[in-house]
Image 1 (cartoon, rainbow, N blue to C red):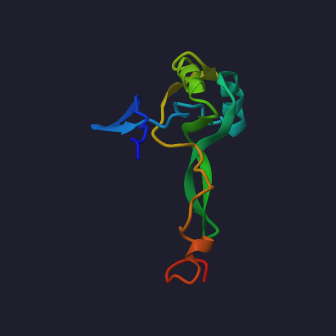
Image 2: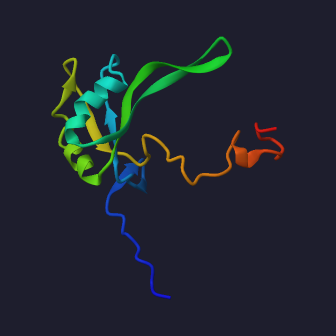
Length: 137
């Protein structure tokens, strides 16, 4: 057998003193106006490239016994189809605004949305049926 081609990770994100590989197609938006929602953020970033998912990160509070998203944390994750779009989005760092509030854009270490194909197991999944502790009882 021949050697497997290994793609070298070139981009990194610093989290404290730790260096993490950056997600290749996702940016982290910081200092967003609190009124910005998913569609507002999508409208801003769609000019950078095709979008896969946009998610404004929100506080979670208990309402009627359930944990539900409430007010914005002022941050968002934007995931693109292609890596080149991340480079375009990074150009918006401190150069774009929403409702007169300038926001920052940086590489993200996590995706805006997790892929569902190929994943097995996990709480409540079909792969957990019959296992103690799972929701699929």
